[in-house]
Image (tube, rainbow, N blue to C red; front, side):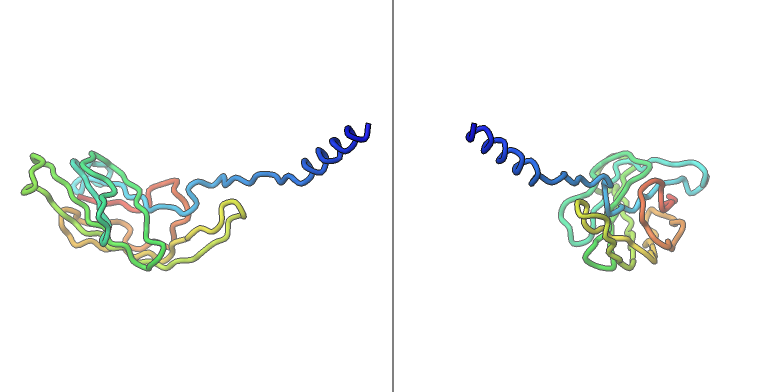
Amino acid sequence: MKKIITFLLFLIIGFSACEKDDFCTQNPVTPKLILRFYDANSILDSKNVDRFSAIATSKTDSLFTNLSVDSISIPLNPLGNQTIYTFKKNNASGNLADNELATLTINYNLKEEYISRSCGFRIVYSDLVLSVDNGWISSVTPQTLENINSQRTAHVQVFH
């Protein structure tokens, strides 16, 4: 009888020491910048970019490689106040000589925001200023954003 009582006592202590699991339900916590590509001649029509590639400055791996896309989501650098991307497209043959390049520079302020114990902190990007070097991209709208705190809709329209 003493063995059963001791076993039940250990079982009760063991279950009472358990903690409820915390799971982060907000995924992803830190939002990405969403770009949507449009035809520069008809601003209401989205337009695919053929053989599209994107690489961040000082990185060696491409974020996208040879895709046909009408929108992308790109991460911003949470360790600095600027992110620079080089975008490549190739509407012709796919030969290196036919590549067209454009550079998108994004300047912003960072703010850390506490979400929960399971999610930790997230970065909120504010006071964004976008500029392009006028390669194959004719313009971006808007050129300034107050903040990025969600990924529900496109933040920037890119005309080409």
